Length: 389
Ligand SMILES: *Cc1c(COP(=O)(O)O)cnc(C)c1O
Image 1 (cartoon, rainbow, N blue to C red):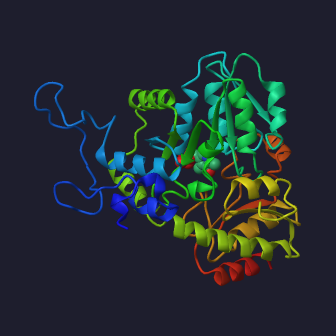
Image 2 (cartoon, rainbow, N blue to C red):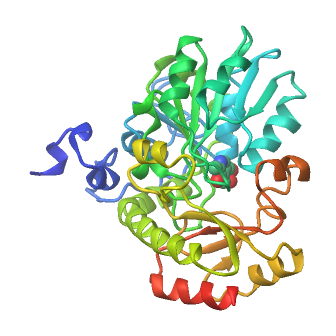
Image 3 (cartoon, rainbow, N blue to C red):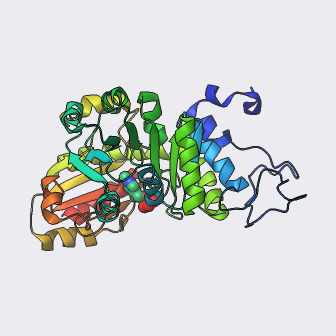
């Protein structure tokens, strides 16, 4: 069957990744969506145009990418932003002073910083709670509660939050439920299908997949929320550029292949690390003894390539030595790219969270986070072996 005559919602994931939202260029037949590197569009007469007025609001390369990402999340609408943080910022702009937000106690550091350092100043109140038990949410809900923000798996301790259970509570109280799906990617989990109102992605990570773009996305099935988010994008101006949109559109074409390998490598490496004498603890949701393993099995299709380890030796010197002695893994922030990365959350991605808060969430100084790439797993294991020796 010719995929172009097939409805997008009937396509399997790998077909959607390649074809959804993408049409051959109408003027030349180019199979790849061109990079429409333009800031404005010529009008026939004032207000009469081809649907494009000014490129902050709309760009054809970005439109193709948004349609593609929406399809991958089983959503109707997607709005892309200049970064994941800008996408989060746009969601917060749906709120008014006095509103309250319930969120997890293990969050991406930049999300925590945006909430506490920017939005608390504007009169938004945040409750950072243990979301792994959905019922915990109930005692924090009052008439001002407007938003629940759940990241799952969490960064870096890989807690799993039951999206369906949390969104059921949110719906009963008319609260918008947002899922940060960055760690899972749409290949592993689709929060809209589980009842979330908005899915947020740091596109920088698995969707882009090649460590060459910073971008964010918000996906929803709700017309009103979509209109508001688009209004915020156009009014606040955190739009991504056409070149970046093209790079992500290209990156996504192999998302399913990359994710398969991330998951296979992740599984082998998690098991290797679990038995290693230098390691105290391995955080990976695929282990049956992981406290949220059953929920992970229920809402995810596999367990991903993100793993955190706690070293037995608690000294900072040893942690730094291990972190700096890799040959294949690179010591760097970010995740989800083809190349394997190692990160020290306490000084890197989570440095903006106060030490006491951080340690309460398990982000101790001797914790390292691995983003397992798609290199050959034998080389990755050999690298871990020499770095931990
Ligand atoms: C990286 C990240 C973000 C922020 O996205 P940027 O693209 O870096 O702005 C948000 N949430 C999670 C889980 C992330 O890993």
